[in-house]
Length: 359
Image (tube, rainbow, N blue to C red; front, side):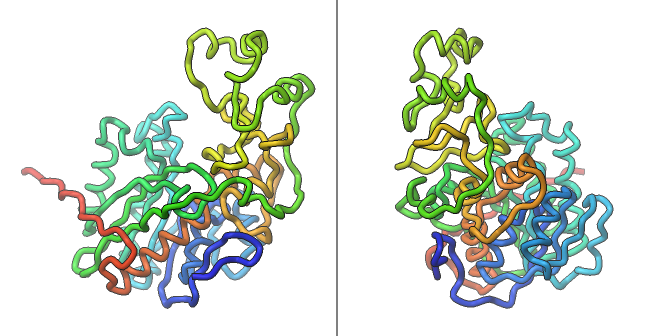
């Protein structure tokens, strides 16, 4: 394992011979992490114009298909792919949204992901989503997803990974679905959590200057009153009533409101914008939201990875991304699986019970 000279970005000592397809590729966080783990991409799919421009600007050689996944035929890749991965849209399952699940069109994109699995027949499938999927509909949604993959001929395991223990300076929990094609004697391996975390101070050392959002006059005045690591509860009572009347009356914690980050802790999960009322991500010592390059550092993108599109689009791309180092660790675990490694620094997980079909 090697470290980036500029920043704590991980790379395998040498490439492997494994191939990958990335769906819902976004700004390329997972795909870049897999590349760092040694994988070669034969196809990436993304339909957001800003994210597509980002992928093409940074990796002109990547075969990016810029269209709605529902219009993509994957049959030509059948039998040639080691790993198919995708972070199918998570908003339908997130506790931050209405949690409509399969009643939301975004939730239905899982079945398009399953169609790609059926057409490609990769050796390994990796699905990534929010932790809230575990409890959605009392766990039924996750069971349905596992059952679909099982019916397609895969053994399925799952685990919630905590990014802050996997070389990411961010408290970001993600549910990982991992599946192996039946008939292949491969274990289900997940990366082991490390015994350390990376502070925001370490993450932002030498971070280049960049564009960023700014606070309006009144909000600037209010945020100046919040100490490092604090939030709305640290404001004078009259300012609390002014800024958060509903939350103040209800007594809710609302820890993301007027949140100023701490230098000595990993960042909380980055949202799609750092200046929204309930998901504030204020710089620890300067009274402003984190800038674009600081956002990218927290998501472990290299400084040379540029983001295309409007400022709003850039923040959204970074906030939606899988942290690059998390992608690296997942890629190394999948490479170990494909290489027949049994454990050796990875956690072996037993497959979920197969769904019993009646009738």
